[in-house]
Image (cartoon, rainbow, N blue to C red):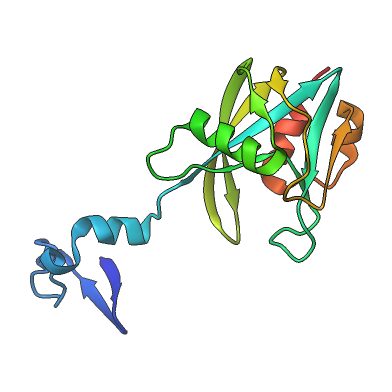
Length: 169
């Protein structure tokens, strides 16, 4: 049995309504089956973040007070915009947040992070050692270059904890 919330009424499709809308009062040709699927399974949000490394230190950023996940530490980066590649997103975010330009990516890996209060994120982590400019804090509470031991002791954003735990010198 498939239950669909449509407007303020809960409608039910039973096996005899196998035509998806038959006798249930739901006309999927009007609301669109793709809309229905996106409603039930919202799209995963894609993000690109940088693990900036310099002289055995990693740049970490603290979210602003009074923001979502306030004062948690995270890596710089952000959400991919429509029509943007992961690398384009990373370059844009680093320009906006830190006023730097990356000169290449050493390696990357992706993980799915699930937050109980806000969806699923596919986060691509880009390990970067070559960039131009001096990182300038444009949007965070603070930024800091830390050792791996210091990084592991900080109050890291939940979605980044598994990656931080696997990092090695």
